[in-house]
Image (tube, rainbow, N blue to C red; front, side):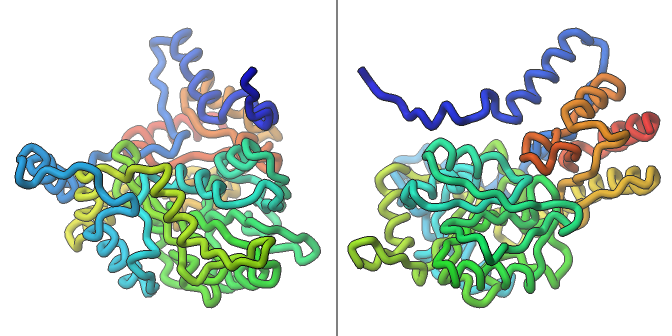
Length: 398
């Protein structure tokens, strides 16, 4: 008889966004005349920028010509895209090498897949609340997870507890779900903690393009010592609207190494390269040409306009909460707005209340962890008209 991975028994029955979709579908079936506005899942609504589309059209034409057709590409990504990413880091004041960059189909995949490199007896430190993928992928592997309280008192930016030892640390900044962003001094504390504990930081910077405050780091590699203890994950999903196109990248420094139980020094960059060449066939050529265009001067200008549009939506949401004297986090250097549910409601009760009375969909904080039980997340990724209407409905309730 085949034996299954029994760690799956420890997972919650339904993934957060599946449960949201189920509740919304049930409501719309029962109320077909109601217009539901979705400010829940972090999915973009604006179309791909013209620079990206034009580049992908050219790539399609190449694939339709025998002389320029391409089959399997390098699992690490084509050099034209890796060079574009390298230049992007340089423009942001961070130096990375070409063979430290691995192109992927998104940060979500890589933050889960990276666990292939680590033994199950590692202790994983995860802030609560947190993006569910970090928890679920390590639960699937049977690792011990230690939670660190992120709360209003610490601005949802917890710092390490020196009395707690961890081997793997997940940090997301700008944070999903709270929208909070670590400054350089705070990240330096985390880097120092990781170096002291021989730990590895898995740094999710999927929303770095939303940072407009130049004093805030957009990469953990802006912090001294980070290349000896951190891996960075990023994505074009929010930077250039690639949620349906799928392209991201992971930076694994060549200086990052661990000592095996037999005393052998193992380099994480080489391990990740070996993993990818075994389990991954690479991102399609057409998509990578589109991603390359997104990093061009014109592409970046168009991407910033797109991000500006979403940041205006965030301000619309934030302004409504300000008028209602509701304290919130995020919304400035992040597309997410995180606030305490009114009238002492728990987040799933508030989800149903908001859906039923205003036909607005958000994300219950409980889906991100215990510390989210009484919090709620709204996203700025809707269109402007719907965002305005949603917040007008919201304002009438409170």
